[in-house]
Every structure is written in structure tokens, then in C-alpha cells.
Image (cartoon, rainbow, N blue to C red; front, side, top):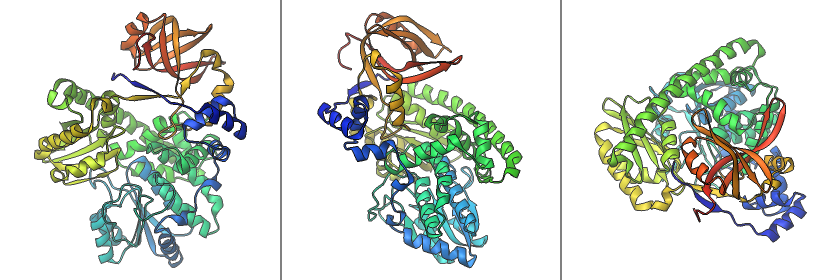
Length: 575
């Protein structure tokens, strides 16, 4: 485990007092809001109580007017519209909400989502030709297409009107399409630049339903958009927060169409409150497994199943996703073990500022997850490459402070194709160029990343004594959810706590202990930290503990406990 650097956030106590008074929240909540950039009462109210009214006017997005006009014209004329999606959760949910909206508006609509193995990533010329041959006169991309210049040229040659909606970083020039809707366009003044692909699709849905006088449909699409938004790990502020928070509430309360109901049942979440953890680690992996391991069409058919008469079919599809997800987990474990062995035994790989590992026949559907696991384990940018014959496909994940897309652009001479954004990207190259690419990328990273960049940060929101950990504080923190990038779960620290009991191993990987401070004892669980038991035992009379607060219900009895993020001996000094 790479040791954390604790970063204590400073808070203006006078400003916190003013915000507590003006917004009607307690002081601890005011501090947390200030540390998240919420400085006035109106902003606090909007953050704590988001509503659909807080969504911006979608017509402020460059290109949206032309997109809406052409789609409504196609609906009225009975022209076939094709929705071209992507095979991850973001792309699948975007495809579902736009296709369903167009169907409800009376459109002749079909969808196409590439097969990861057969078609590759993104909007390409063969897909345009296929959709044209099937009668499409308008093609709308979701979560892809911003670098699809060749596909746009082919669409124009064929007389197909192409509308691109995407959220990935544009290149120097936009594709020559009828409309390009992307908040990251350099000429787009839209106030929220951080939407997921499904978020951009939702803005198109919002515009279409508003023009058709069907705004009442929007909440049903928000809960599907919440799944894609949370899965895509975008900042949970602004419109993303509105989508995620309202979507989670709707997922928790229902009612749901047959497909979504079957998905929730298959994850064991029926009738339970659904939070961001459940989406990220239970629902989204099942949807993702379709595109990773077999065909994304399984997930699409499931989420498009609307009628109650389809519930039996929907449950069968959900069971297929469970099976594919279990297969994905097995493949992931095997490849991760191989990749870690390379990093830990080969200094040409493990001693670099960025990790580039490659393996023959590694399943392309899981190398992105493996790259994320390597980043978690070693806190370095990671590229995991699957070699298939003479071709190599790579998936890249990064750390804060390192722009992966910029790095790939610098190494473009070694690549056939690449795309993505600063945190995650994909690439294709010939296998003979892997070594040269590794040298180029790791040299680029080595020039830009120092030792301090390669230490993970642990953001500490404030000092807290165990007597301050109350149900009222816990409920207040819950109002800040959902948590993620841009809105981290509050982490506190308590100095000089004592280990009253334990630590004891749980399932060989975790530690459970009883911690005492100022006369109050709380159970603490330190996840994936079994190897640190001797360190904790040696400092049992004085342990600085960083943690988040959790609620545990067992046998009908509910208690508060701490989920330990890190510990250090109280005399260890700064870390």
C-alpha cells in the first residue's frame, strides 16, 4: 500500500459561522459546505436540495437548436433515425434514453452499439454505411463521435444527416456534421462542462420533450441517466449532482419499467434505498459486463424492456448479465495477478513513473478495470495492453495531475488510434511498437511527475472528537450525498485514539477493532489493510485515525462506527 499524504483542509471559521446562520445549518455542516466551494445560503440550498428546475436551458449548448429541429423534422416525416451509442454504461444508458424518447415521440428509430471485439470503439465509417443501408436518414451519436471526422465525411457523401453528441475532448477541428453538441467545444459557452455522455444525451432529451410539450417525461429518464453519470466517474457538482441525487431518489422509490426492475432485483436491491455505492458496484458492473464480455445488446434489450408483460424476458436478460459479470470478475482477477507480477518483478516496468504492461490474449473487455486497479495499488498512471496477433489494444487510467490524453497525443507517432480524456483513454497500435511506446510514455511521465505526485492524497475535512459523532451529524452528512469527484465523502481525523480491542482480521483482508477517544468507544473497520495489524498493535496507546462515519445495522440494532481510511502513530509527525 502506497502511504497517504494527509492534506488537512483549512476552513474560515468566521465564514462558516455566517453560512450556518444564513443557511440554517449547523456549524459542522457549514464547514463541510465551505470546503466544497459553497459560500452563500442560496448556493447551499441548491446544493442540499437540487431540483429539475436547476437544470440549465439545453438550448444554450452549441448545436442543440439544429439537432432538435432536424430530429423533430425526421419524426414528422417518418424518416428513420439511428441512435449510435457506445458499449460502456455511459453509452448504453445514453442510447436507451434517447431511443426511448424518440419512440415516444412517434419516430421510426433504431439503435446501433458497436461490439467491442468486432467493431472497435467509437463512430466509424463502416457503422455509417451499415446504418445508411438499413434506411437511416439521420444518425445521432451519443457518448462518442467527437473525433469521428472520417465518419462525418462519409455520412455527408451518403446524404445522411449526422448529429454528434459527446462529452470527450474535441480535436483541433470538429467533425463536419449537421450538428455537434458537446459542452467541451471551444466555442460553446454552456456553463456546465463536466456532463457525462448520458448527461449530454439527457440535455437533448430535455430539449426534445420541452419542444413537444412532454416535459413530464423527463424524471423517468433522469434515473437512467443517473446510472450512467455515476458509472462514468464525472464530478458530482452542478448538473451532474442534480442528475445523480434526483436519479438515486427515483431509483430508490420507483415504480420502474420491467427492465430496470429486473436489474434492481437481480442485484438484491428491490425495495431498498439505492445510493451511489449500489450503482457503482452493483448495478453498473452488471450493465458494463454485457459490453465487456459478450454483446452490449443484452443490456440494451433489458433497459428498453418497458411493458410489465416483458418481465419474464427481462429477468432472463438480467440473469445473463449476472453470469457475464461473474465471468468478468474471474477474468479481471487473473489478468490483475499477472499484471501485478510484472510490475513488482520487472524494473523496466515497475520502476517508472507510469506503468505500461502487456499480455498475450488478455481479455480486452476487462483491461480498463485492471488499469484502474493498478492505479489504485501503485498510484501511477497505468496502461494495460492486450496483444492479439499483430495488433495491440490498450486501456489507460490516470492520477490527478497527469493528463493521459495529452500524454497519448505526445506519443501519437507510436499509435494507430487513440482517444478519451485526461483521466481515461483507449488506444490501438501494432504489437511491434509496444516497447517504443512504453519508452516514450514513461519518459513523458518521468519528466512531469515527481515523487510527491506519486503519493496518494488523503483529504481531511477537519478534526473531530468521538463525542461529536452523533446521529444528527451523520444525517447531516447524508444530505451532502451522493459523493464522488468534486464532492468527496467527508473524512475526519481524531488524534491519539486508543485501540481498546483488536485489531482482528476479517476475511483475511480487513481489520476490525474497537477505538476509544475521550471516553467514547466506537467500532472501526479498516478495509483491505490486514497487513497493517502489527503497526496498529504497536501504536495501540496513541493512534491518529482518519475515517468516514458509517451506520451499521445488525440484528435490528443500529450503531455508528468509523470506516478507517488511514492510521499513523500519534508521535509519527507529519505525513
